[in-house]
Image (cartoon, rainbow, N blue to C red):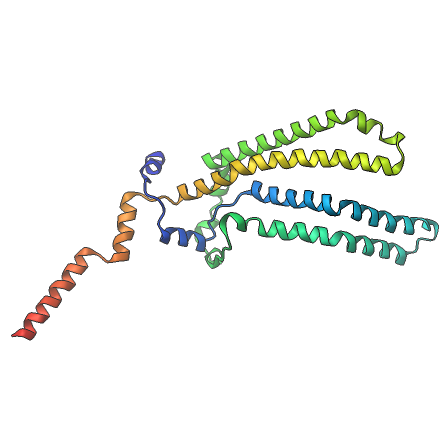
Length: 251
């Protein structure tokens, strides 16, 4: 019956149904798209500001740990405060991107109806049944596939740079840091490419699944049209009543 009901939903969602879904907070979301924007911001930030940030943190830590024997509690607090001041703009940029990334797919959503009390929410069965639904199984399969792909990419990156990483202890500190930074940048680019492919697949899929879930049967579309335009039977009665009033006035 569920499959027949799904197949019968051949009409696209109306503007009224889409607006009602937005009011209830039901909008398409793509975690992969948000992850792509956050990782992209991180990559750009590290490429533009990473060397300066590392150099500034090295100066702060070198100045404090040069007097490690006399490191007082207030000096330790100063170390944490200065480090936080340097890192905070970078973390703030990542936070803002993570906050605004979901709006790219669905826009700003104000859903006061989400806070209203609904008795069906007290039923725990949908929570346990959701992972075994078609959508839940697909999301689980997608998550497993994504983890496997990321693990494979990280393993490939590790194998490609195994000799380079093994030789880091023999290098001077500045050179070792530069080499390690290059390896990390390569791994980050591979991760970014994998997330990009996932986002290119997931964002259209989430949008299609959202519209498919709001699709209407032909009967629902006709009923909504009658509600919007008025019932034909009611219009006929009103028309007959107006004609009777005109005839009464004419007499």
